[in-house]
Length: 415
Image (tube, rainbow, N blue to C red; front, side, top):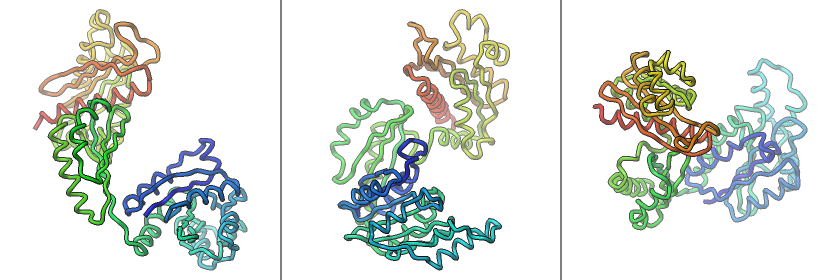
């Protein structure tokens, strides 16, 4: 089955609000075996909404719509829906009871006229009750296309999708299985990786699709396949994963929702090791990534943001003569920073980064994007030089991910 998604709201079109609803809906539909064809956004004008419904409903089994169902007077979606489906608004007693219960939980006893109007729904729809808000969802059918309208508030929409709408669809229709598997890699460029995998790619089983999704130095390889039997698809994908591990074993670091910081955290916890950071150009980004993982307090000791040379020398015991001779962005300084923070915090491992994030500060010998990263463990200290590019935000992110990956590689060697 095929679906389109339509979001309603000027706030989306002017960039004031990021449309996260469509991403969630698409992910849930894919899990259920429904293929999303297109995602549209329209403004808060009746003619635009009707045109959007026509466009989204063309050659589609389902249209999922969010937005415009609030209690304020600028939300005109219900009136437009009535016009589109030749329907009229009528008070729904069950929805009114739901609104009373919802308002009551907030300590209110009086229902405003605007809230009362939310209990008015088109007479030709199937009402889907909303326990997380005051606006119900509405289900219509027109020319064999099912239209499902939901409030735009994310937590309300998510509850409706997972608790009611997806189960209802599964009860009504026999759906195929759609399986996605994502392999996370670091250490190669997209074009280089595609060339390495070219022969393997040509021999993929029919129906198995591969997409290359680069971002932040990480390349995601997404496997996608659909069919009547989920286990058959899973077996096919697993077989290709085994082949992939034989071709690029060194750059695969995780799967699906893994992140580099999560993978590193697991490895630290498994080995009962701790880590600390000394950051210059990344300004605390690595530490922030590490501590974003629940339970990181078990293995993260702390960090020093050694942005100035004075902090490098006075706090991390970096040799001042080495900074003068080699510069703050150098191998010896990075390695001394790593050893210094390891000693200062008493951690088993450490990461140090020093570089030129940009946009200024580069030279012919050390252009913007030059970064030295060092990783120190109780066994040894290693360091690598990277030259990323001219974009400051990219350099900070790429350096942070590269530093974590260096630690990951070292931890693999520690059993």
